[in-house]
Length: 190
Image 1 (cartoon, one colour):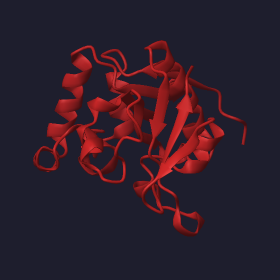
Image 2: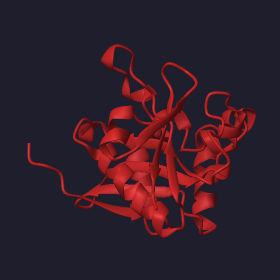
Image 3: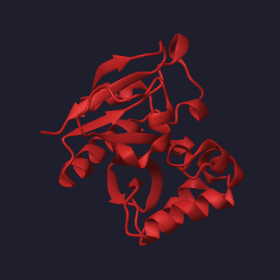
């Protein structure tokens, strides 16, 4: 298989249809539409599916860029959600993902790769592109919360925050671990 030559674009009104195509009718994973960490649990559940799609569309229409898309030619193949940490209230509610310190960080909250493109390095390339995006917008630290696979494997549906190997390959280093399966990894952008 030839190596992929990916390109990256921010999620804006111009790329909204690409995002919808990538996520499909089900909203990537059970109607999430990448809103899980942005909402209170009750609200997330109440608007799962169409409500979450509309909520993400409203974010995009407001001019906020919630992440980047990866493309193979014109085909959208991956999604990386990233924003300043305070855009994700669920992180503040998690005892495992509490802030490491008081430094301002941007967070990678989701890495979604189309099933035909998995295990080809797409997540690592998206993390590298995410770092460039965050740096261009003034971020000094990019942080992620991957899941450490037990016994070397994790079903893709449970790896939506990425796995440590992809973060390590993109230059991130573990800075905290409050759970055996959940490291907090950082990349300095200075």
